[in-house]
Amino acid sequence: MPQVNWIIMVILILGIIGKSDIIAAAAAILLVIDYVNLERLLPILERRGLEIGLLFLVISVLVPFAANKVAGREIIASIFSIPGVVALVSGAIATSLNGKGLQMLQSRPEIIIGLVFGSIIGIVFFKGIPVGPLMAGGIAALLLRILGQWP
Image (tube, rainbow, N blue to C red):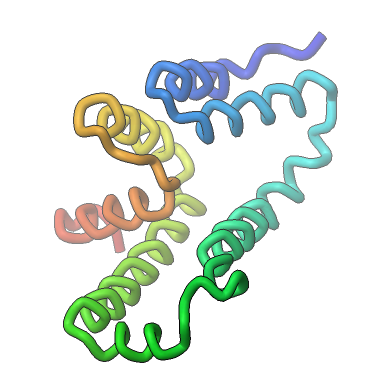
């Protein structure tokens, strides 16, 4: 019988307490993989899991275009409006921060516990929505760089 992975178990409990279905489901899936001795999947998930998740995220964002719910004229008008320009700049900043977050999570995976706790605090006390560790990691990387704790 496999030994219980207590860190993943704590993350599962925190996900349930914080009402973060995605965190809870991810932890539960990893516990099942560990319990049924499918550890050989872990390197594949580590290497390609993020890409697969991002693929589905991008697909979900692009569905309105595929379903013809957004007209081409609306897109052009939106891009050249003040909100559109702000959205373009925000998208560029967010993706840059996400990249820094990914780098930090890859080099310092222990920081994920703080990100999970922070996400739960944001959900419970600030009515936030957990969208994933990359943006939280990106903000953490930015703050750590400002504090001189990150290259």
